[in-house]
Length: 503
Image (spheres, rainbow, N blue to C red):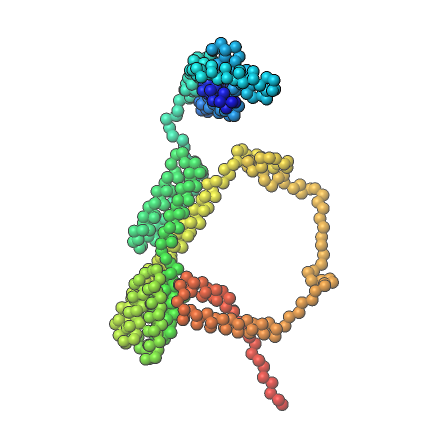
């Protein structure tokens, strides 16, 4: 019976809920308008730049907060008594509906059971004729006009433009510190420009042009420290991108392997050693002036095989394919005994060596430019937090350390006439009682050196055998060679053993 009674009252109760939500929304609008008026007045009185935003947010937040609060409070708590009273009041039922609702919610004694059932039946008969729109009509809240007027006033105060001083027609001056760093960057680019004037390289010319444009942009008015650091970072990224495309390490590895293969022949030993050691200018001269090559049959065959292996590995890796072709051509010339073919291949290898030498020099200049840009970054933000200069050294703790620049960082000068406390310590290092005693002999050192050399030679041979037989990437080969070169024993003269003859 309770559910049936509530189902008849539900349309009325729902309309009452929406009416109450409307009242709460208008109340929130009125409260938000009052806050917006306060923000607008404060904005005009004090020149508060963000006062308009604050007033607008208050106007929007007031109704939203009112609606959310009403939904959160009213929906979980349906007021059936208010709906029953509204029905009784409209149809003049003299509390029939409210009494029936009370009987339905309570446990009625047995002696009053018949009366309660009669009351419920009478209420249900009247509720069947209820019209929700007539019982609970929607009406505008009483204070809606005031809320609208207050909201309009707050909006006007939020939109009224503030009085501002006339803007200066001249742009702000560039930062002197940033301009000085831009001049240093331009000076550091001159050496790179001189190198590019000797060798035409479209990619590097494009890079140099981009770096110059970025350096000029640093001198523009309005460039702050943050923007300057961003532009310098873009310059560093452009240089690093150009360096990554050069593939210097791979070409170095290719030329080194070809040089090692050439060094096995006496006629090519000078050029081969120069290539293997990275002396590309010397190697270019040796290969360009290469004369007739006369090799024994076994020596020619071994050299040609090594060159072909080196050319095959160079061809399989990224890099300049002309190096592999020139090495193959040189191997064929040595194998066939064709001196003219060897000379042509030597000139091609010499040109590749000269090109690599120029690239390495440009790469060194780019590395120097990166270092210069890093220094300029630090100089741009140097003393960026200093607010004023102090002519004394502070001896008191502070919560704003680092925000000032002192002009006398060493403090007051020492009074030479003062009575200074000096202590003189006498003695020599090594004197006195010691708990440790260290002894060494030349025989022990020599034995340790020989043992180290033996172990080094053992694993060096194993490494060479693996590098010769296995297909290892060029980068890994170079890493292995550098490692063994770094741990190679130093050449030291050992005392010759003395031979004693029996008398």
